[in-house]
Image 1: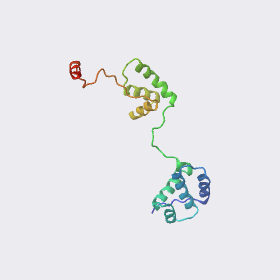
Image 2: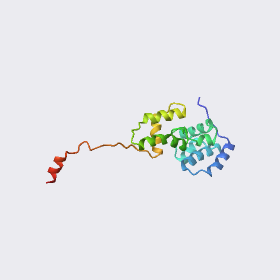
Image 3: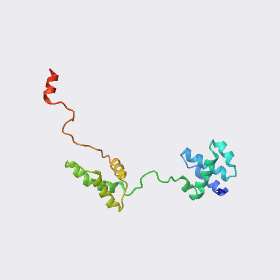
Image 4: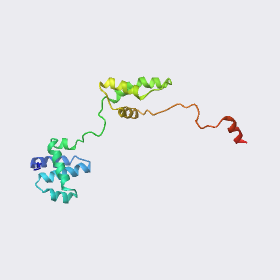
Length: 161
């Protein structure tokens, strides 16, 4: 038998108050469904009113109850890298590599990653370094002496005639 998640009338009043502050219409819609559920409406009626599947409303109620109320329900878990250090700390880390780049030295991502991991104190995902570099407006620039398919000087002169 499935566990039934119930929302009390007290929670419904709390949700109603909180909905006045919410600016995101999708969050408001979910909270409204929970408010109606707490006020005693049936899941079928709410689903019809909001044009949502009744199972979705049950899932919202489950999340609300399991995550400890409104704050747990609204907070979205995951979805981005957790911040290991502040923007300023990242800037300090990249300063050393920026000096190397300005001298014309080639910098590899593995070097930056090793320094980053050492500062953080654990291994991180290699993609995180690219996120950090993009956040600090770094871009890949590779020197090239000449175009690989450039014609020789004689061919260029011959085509001008």
